[in-house]
Image 1 (cartoon, helix red, strand yellow):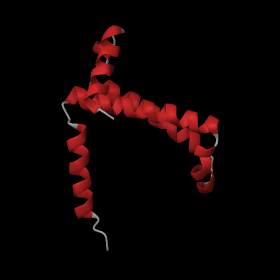
Image 2 (cartoon, rainbow, N blue to C red):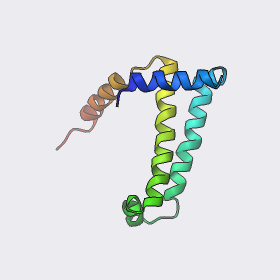
Image 3 (cartoon, rainbow, N blue to C red):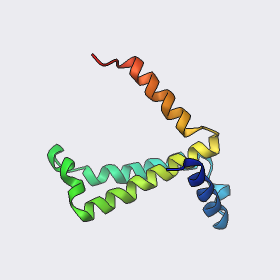
Length: 104
């Protein structure tokens, strides 16, 4: 996935709909949490085993795909609006986690 191209596409989509004034980092973060809640809701009453099998049901898989995409879109937009380089941030965080949680 080309994050820069995705950010440019989302910027253009927002501009076309005149959403830019409303897409502040605060608003985007709040919207992302709403979408993350919708993702959690899919699994809310499933057992752990059912949640592991959820992707095998085409209807549930599509619902998951939609909510995961919404969360990712908002994350990408938050990074864009705050100047965070997602690839660099992810690489740095993986490195920090490797130091914090070394394999035994």
